[in-house]
Length: 242
Image 1 (cartoon, helix red, strand yellow):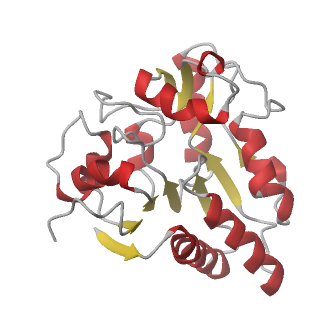
Image 2 (cartoon, rainbow, N blue to C red):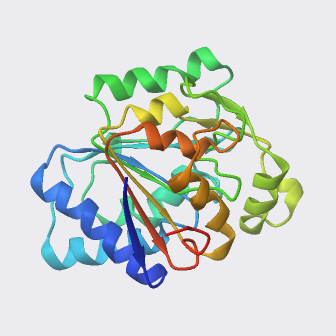
Image 3 (tube, rainbow, N blue to C red):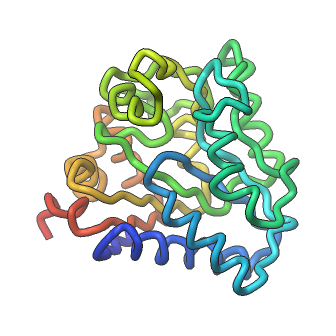
């Protein structure tokens, strides 16, 4: 695991953005796994700026997002499809037909698993971007999730619902379920970069970096992957032993 500690969220966005853009420059047909939430916002802003400055070509890039709230239409302002369009896809020359987000209308796990088949058909994910929850979730794989899980309908914990309520008018508006790539789905990516900032992520980052591998800290499964970069600010790294 490659650990990079930066000063702040802005530097995190630049480091992560450069890493992703360099991959695109090296491989015009790259398949990216993308994340939503507050963690990647500075990364996407930086990516948009650099793409425009350097005229970086996204026309053959394909993307798969980690998750989507169950029951939200793509036009809903809190849906992750809406988030991706607003924060990245509308600002680069990507073909939106090549940008996949799990459907919030999926009814059961059999339908949800078709997402994994689409990823496989695309040749697998070359680079997967991840955030991390306070409780160590990646995607919406909450504590106790099986390391063998594929894309499925999942229940969100009260902690996750509380953390995400800041994006909604009130807590009762937050969906209680989501469709999420599973931990096995994520681990199939050829390369993974996980980002985090803020003191509230420090405990999760400690479990991620120092282990042990434990289903109660889903992020710790990444210790079993052979190509992971973790980029965090000093506050998120504050509980690490070294």
